[in-house]
Length: 187
Image 1 (cartoon, rainbow, N blue to C red):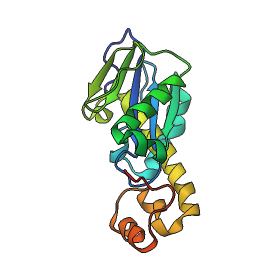
Image 2: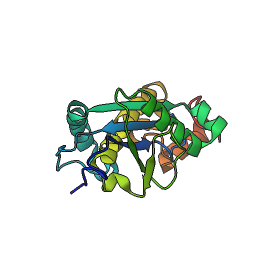
Image 3: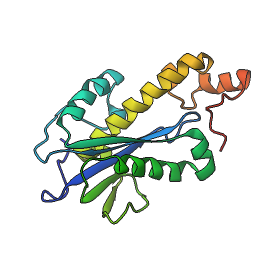
Image 4: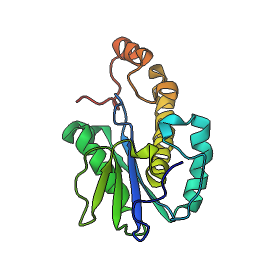
């Protein structure tokens, strides 16, 4: 069972990203503020859920969250600032779009760049420990997957409907055969 919060008396926001290890496309991040009494036993780290489970959970998260937002950093921006900084920037962009101001950020992972004056806590495998980070994981993953499905329609030879831009054997073979697309990362 995922933990509901670190500090019950603070407005906490979970943050996670999707697409960091991809060869193509943007990186997406989500920021999610859940009520302290949020309960969803099915919720887990998006990597531990099937695609069908993630898409079933997304509307539930969106309806029950106090606030949520998505941030995106394009592949050209990734090439300019590197994927680590792009992941931080995507989270910052998501936080910029929140309607509520959090008092504590729960970040999935071991590093983060300070956002404004809001304290943060980095939590390794946080998406498997805290509900707000798991919810952010699901939203970031589903929004990015939708984006990759749209790119697949434009560039079907890379099979992004299956690999979502990750470096699978079929994806790498397509790059060798057809070259890189305009949305492949060059860095």
